[in-house]
Length: 171
Image (cartoon, rainbow, N blue to C red; front, side, top):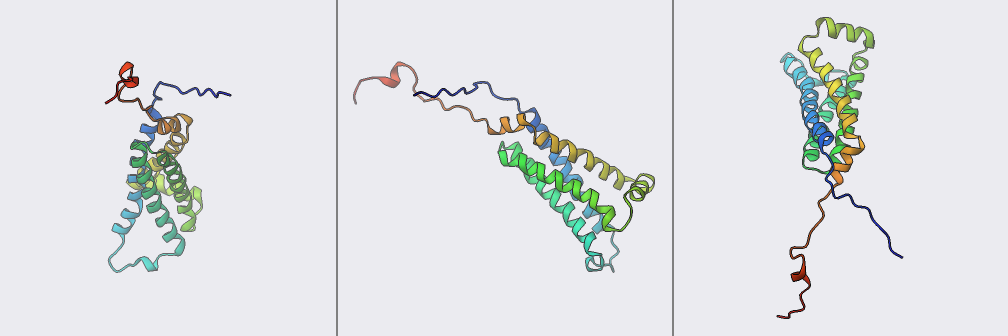
């Protein structure tokens, strides 16, 4: 009984994987900017221990999202399948951190969005950019062509091919 395998000899396009990796790098920077900016804007006499617990969880979610997105982007650009999975998890973590932020300070989402768009400045641009990048990275990372490109390995060809490879001459 013979099994026929149909291996495609054409290399899959890496557009979605490379784009997901590059956008993942940008999303990692955007996710890391939020807590760093909050830490830098804190007065010197104020400590992290004085912040409510949910605010600390939200800041940790932003930092975690930035780290997972960075690791996912780098591993995707090095053609590891785990990179696409890490990008998807990092994008979900970033979206979760964005949605949890108004809840962590006890403000309704509509009021928070209104304050961000009227008085937000660069903080608003960063959060809107992170939301857009996270959605794009999530979609691009989980597309089948991304996994097809990351799983593709070039077929190994023997060094000697042709008649010389099967020569009956001895040493």
